[in-house]
Amino acid sequence: MSDSMERAHEAIHEAHHAHGDPWAIGVAVLVSILAASLALTEIGGKSSQNAYLTDHIAVSDDWAFYQAKNLRVGVLGSQIAILESLPNAADPAIQAKIKDARDEQARLRDQPGKDGMKQLAEQAKARTEERDHAFHRYHNYEYAAGALEIAIVLASVSVVTKMRILTIGAGVVGLLAGIFALGVALGVV
Image (cartoon, rainbow, N blue to C red; front, side, top):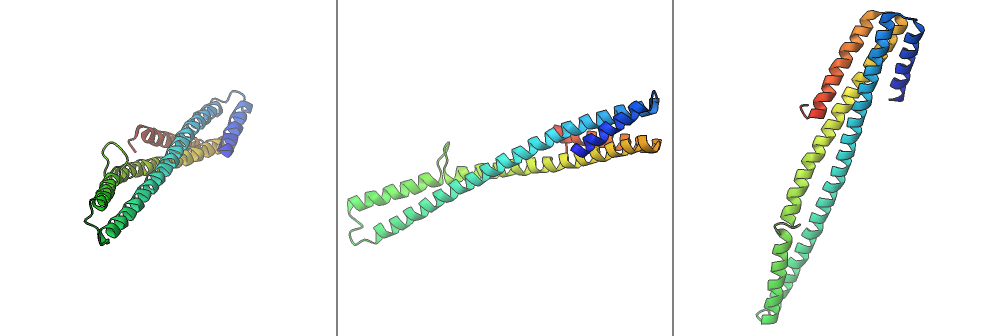
């Protein structure tokens, strides 16, 4: 982004030295608008990138917690199997331990309103969608920022070369990039 800002500053400086050339001043204004649009697009991109990273960490945490509970369910299953294979498995104290282990397994698997395995899996899947959406938004902001940088370069070159067609091209590319970035911000794209 610093190279684009430097080019924008150079274009404005060049327009200032054109001493009243309305076209050069117009290009300087265009470059300023493009630079401001680029800054806003970069802010949106960073925000989406941060959301992606936050959601990615949360998804990893959810699945790690899910796996830990799954391991506990497996250990409880082994405990139940061992208790049931004992010669005195019919003893009420052992039956109570078996029942407690099965109840704990059921609680770990599904605990409505809490963090059972079922709830963790649903939460992780929902966060995965949020993460993927943030990643998609981030890339779209990057495309818009790249197009705005190209527009700034075109506008800057148009001042130096006095080729007005480049100014028109810069305006069109910048307008399309700005509309695209706005679409990303509004969730349309």
